[in-house]
Image 1 (cartoon, rainbow, N blue to C red):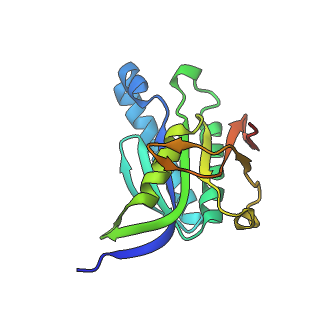
Image 2: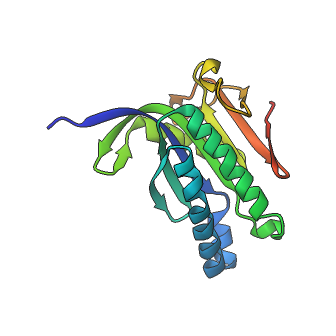
Length: 179
């Protein structure tokens, strides 16, 4: 049996401090996270992507292009910034987002493989309220309205992530991160 593969821009998002938040207010946190996921759904679709799956506090998304994934990450972080404005700091829902362009194995509606794993690793080392990507050539971002800034290379679990870029939210704006 041949396994289907395709090239995709993968976005992995995770709520920062989810276990702590659940410990403080399980029902309230679950409701807020669910509402955030629901509010993100039209943003994802509007950028040509799809939510592959949710895992409690996490989301795995697939996009046809890196530009679409980056624009979606910017829009989701802006949405979360706006939603948390009135929330006490210790109860705010912040996402870390990792984006990778890579091959994925297609298993029904699911995607798996190194492309997904690298996106998840990037998400894991990302700053709260930011997104990080494995940067392909900068020409890939020619269509992005707020191009991300390159940052230093990172290495996780023996996999070189190469050149990475990141942005973080500041107020309701997304600004390039410098390091």
